[in-house]
Structures are given as C-alpha cells and as structure tokens.
Length: 242
Image (cartoon, rainbow, N blue to C red):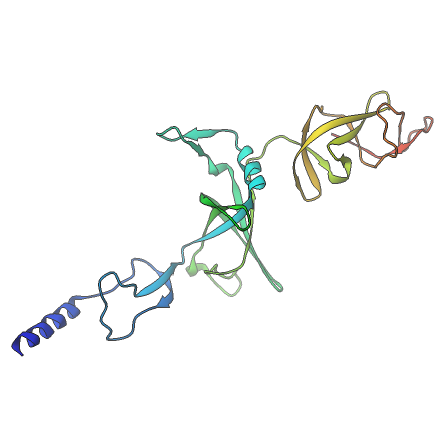
C-alpha cells in the first residue's frame, strides 16, 4: 500500500513539473488526447500547422518542368559535383478564386519534389508563401490554410526568344515574306505554347516579315502582295515583323 502511495505521489510531483508548450504559434488541426489522460512516451498528442509560412505542392508536367529548367542560364555545383539550379531566377504566384473572391500571393520556389506522381506523370515544385496573421483585416486577402484549393503560376528566367501568334504556325513551319515579295517556308521547332503565343526556334532574323493568314496552296517561292500594296496582286497577305 505504501509503495503504491509513493508511486502516486511521485506521479503527482512529475505532473506538477510537466508543461506541454508549442515551440511557436501554430494552428491546431487535430487533438488526440483527453483531459486527465495518461500519455505514453512518443505518443502523438496534437497535430498542428504553421501559420507564418505555408507550402503549396504545385504539380508540373515533365515537359513543363524541362521547359522551366532549360530557361535557367546555368547550374551551379555542390561540394559533391551534383547540379544545383539557382531557383532565385524563378518566380511564382499563388491564386485563389472562390465565387467573387479573388486573391493572390507571391511565392518562392523552396525545392523540387524527389518523386514523380505515378497517376498524373507530374513532378512537384514546392512553393513557400509567407503570411502574417497580425496583418489580417476584413479588407485583406484571407489566410492560406491547410487543404485550401489554389492554382499556381511558375515562371522561369526570362530569355530572348522568338514569339509568334498561334495562327502563324503551320505544323513545324512558318511563312515569311522575303525581300522579293515571295513566300519563304521556314522550318521551326516549337519550344512551348502560352496564351495563344508560341515560342519557337529556327533560322530567323530580326525584322523578317511573318505571314499571319493561311495560304492555300502554300508554295515556296510564290509571289505575294502585302495588304495595302498597289503592286500586281497574286495573293493578299497579312504580315507582322519578327
């Protein structure tokens, strides 16, 4: 009896000295204990989420990930000689839209996911968004919380590129109007598409005239005329300069 009483007194003394505190301000998401419950070592008591920095796992296709990586000028190397891309040249933004509510936040690329999603064949880009609950007001954007559905926009390093309208691309070729007012069919490589614009690579020069409308038939070397020209008409064309 005295032994059990001593154990109870020892437990009470330990309880008086036991204080459970969070290391920082967190949002409690899940509570796995009850009042007056005995807690064992390594037992999970609560699940909490940070509120100062939120993470978004943005999924990009392998093609888009390659396009993003190829925009970087060069990779640095770590002490083991492994490539270490400079993500400071990559910008990102998070968007929330729910009914009439629209909000967005700037984000930074923290890291690249180490695995590929087997179901979607996508790679994750982990974005970090800093926020302050102290700055919240009814007029500001709502805080980002765990599970909120958002969209992400990730932009790589800006590089000089040939950009043409979508309608100017005919498969893997574009039409140019040469100095003799004749059609030149130039092969190109499509790098990627965005907002009805196409980024291409090919043997092109600044100032060349790009034909925007479709030509049927399109024969290399055929005589053309620009709209508004008073010369003899073979075929009317709309053009824009590269």
